[in-house]
Image 1 (cartoon, rainbow, N blue to C red):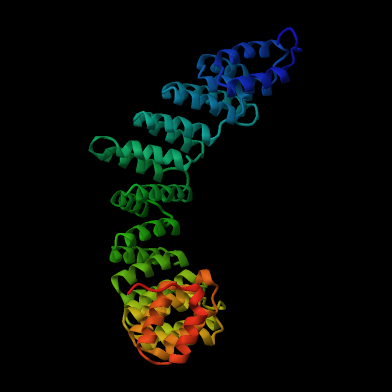
Image 2: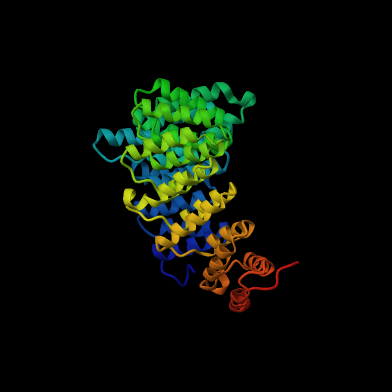
Length: 441
């Protein structure tokens, strides 16, 4: 190529990238040497060269290029070098490069030039120390970020917490120190936001007790109240563990600090009340949500209907659905009516379930396969053959692939065995014959 191609940086750059993608490291280095001899090197050229050296793990050459560029090194290019150091399991080296960049940044700041460092650069070094279990320098890096008003990303926070929790003795002292760093990171708003992210990580790692400890520290040491996100993460985790009373206590605490209950949080608590069959608390939470002036979501209505159904409050559930559109401006869907029917059937309140079906038809909502599959067995069990026949007529109106076949076959068999509506039963069987198959005896 040296004999047949002009010594052009664009050509050498393309060849260098091609060789890099092909995994030809030695070829890349030879082309890189020609690349540097092809003319004066701009910042863009040096950046490309540094990325190549970083990809090859040639840290000495990469650092030499970095020092040539100095404060002109773009943050994303510097981060390539830092990542290469971390990948080579040399976090101390990455910290050294970062300190050099800080010195250059300070000099440029004195001259009024732009800064070259970013939060991603610090996060890379932070992850490197955390991965090696070197918590003191990781905490020092964290503190330097705070001094510069930078926040670590979720991956960096997770890496540090994982390192803390892998320490002997579950890292109690380090956990306390990290909590202190989090709470002292920037102003109260920034600290609260970072703590909320840490709470999410700890909950996902099945470390709810540790998350609750961090929350209590945030609550006691911060002048600003915890965010709704922080409350929501913990409430959902407590509800998932069927710990309703601590979840309700957090909701009360949230109200005490002036935070407003939102629809998502209310839905989590209502679900917990449903599992515990705590009707009184569920009603209170629902009333508080309505009082805030927010429009409850479709999911909130579903959970509230399940709560009322599990407590046998079928008439109240009917009233809630019937007046929902007038009160909140959104018409209930077939899902809500199905939920209403299901709650009644679980308590064997067959008349109430049929009343819910009639309410759905009066509202102009067509039943789908799931609604019919829910109600048909109940009407068969109640031996309400008029209702069974009406439901089978509804099934005829569904597309063949959406019909609940097993359920329909059983209902037809029972209707025939009851020796009622013989003519209508034969007609229904004929009209449904193409969509059903004989049920097992």
